[in-house]
Image 1 (spheres, rainbow, N blue to C red):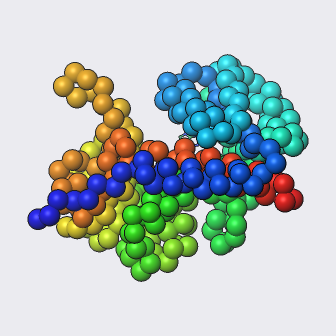
Image 2 (tube, rainbow, N blue to C red):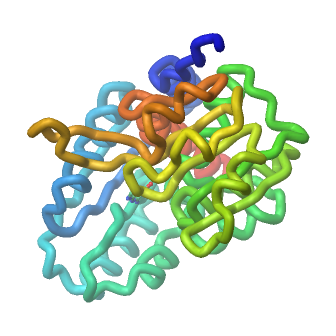
Length: 284
Ligand code: GUN
C-alpha cells in the first residue's frame, strides 16, 4: 500500500489569502472586520485572537469587541445595529457559542446579510442552497477550496459528511452539491454508520468526537477530510486530535492532518469573505 498523501492546510490557506489581498488592492479603503466575543471561553479567545492577528497581518483593519459574559442581549443587538449602519465596517462576526441567556438565532439574524462574513444569516443560507451568490460559511467553503487546490475531483463523487451542524456539516453538504458531488449527511442517529462511510470517495468527519472514525469505516484509497478539533490528554500532555483515528488515515489515499489541515482554511476564508463583502458594499 502506498503512503497516503498529506493535505496540509497552509499552502491552500495562503492561496486564499492571496485572493483576499488581490481584492483589497482594488479597494479605496482597507476592509474592516469586527469580531464580537462574549465571555472568556478559552477556545473562543484563541480563535478570535487568530482572526484578529491574521486580518492585521494581511493589511486589513480589525476590531475585537470583547464583551463580558453577562452582556445583555439588547446591548449586543445595539452594537450589531451600530456596525450594520457603519459604512466603514465591512464584516461582522459573532463568535459562537454565545452564553445561555442570549438567543443565538435572534443575534445571527440581526447581522446585515451583506456584512455576515460567517454566512450564518438566513438570507445567506437561502442563497447557499438555492445556488445564488452570497457569503458562505468559512470552514465549509475553505474545504471546497482545499479540494480544488489539491486537485481533488468532486463531480460525481460520493461525499459522505458525518456531522450536521449549521457551522460545517449542513453548509458543506450544500457546497458539495453545488460541485455536483453525490452527498450523504450522516449523524449521531444514523444506522449502520460504518456501512455508510465505507461508501465514501471523500469522507468528511465534522462531529467533534475524538476517534469516532475507525479504520473499518474507511474505504481503501478514500480522501479523508478531518474537521474535528478535540482537546485530549495523551501521555500526560494536552493534544489536539481530529475525529479520525490515526490508524484510519493509513487506509486513505489522502487526508488532512489535525492540527495543520482544515484549521488554517477557516480564518483565510473569513478574510476572503471580508474582502468580498467590502467590495460588494462599495459596488452597492
Ligand atoms: N465557533 C466555532 N466555529 C465558529 C465559526 O466558524 N464562526 C463563529 N462565529 N463561531 C464559531
